[in-house]
Length: 194
Figure: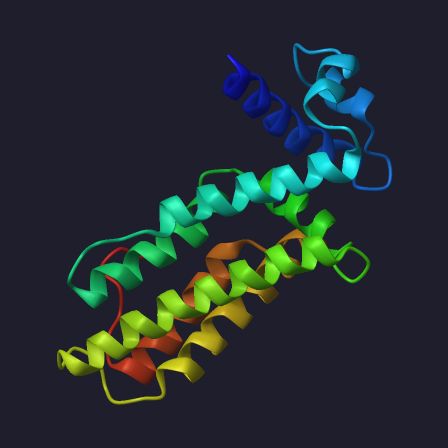
């Protein structure tokens, strides 16, 4: 029961953050998005900052779970990575990108937020670099600097999310750019493409 309550609060936080933004986010607005009272939310989280830290932990854990790919084929791992990053937006889950952008704007002022975003960025780059490195060793990819490829891919993803939220540009365009880059640099293109 406790876990279900916390998950409901975290999902309500996501919706309230998307609807009201960081500046206008209150525990009452989060409660309005759930079946809980603000007192019930305060039972689980003393402050809004504590709640938002839990929200980022929830996001990070979910992302890690989705990103985990045990496939031995580095091409499949790279495809899984691209699917995890791009499919939520392709399936109309645009509000999550807005919620994350709201929190990213606070990262310069909140060390705990920054630490979580740095950890996600490092995890993304490691996943790409490892798949590229393994793909080179297996003879699937052209020899390149795996870390440089990973940095380009993750930087482009981050820029694509900014363009999606701020400019309304579809992430499909960012995915197309990344796939073209991977084909040019690695000599490989994902089988599943937009």
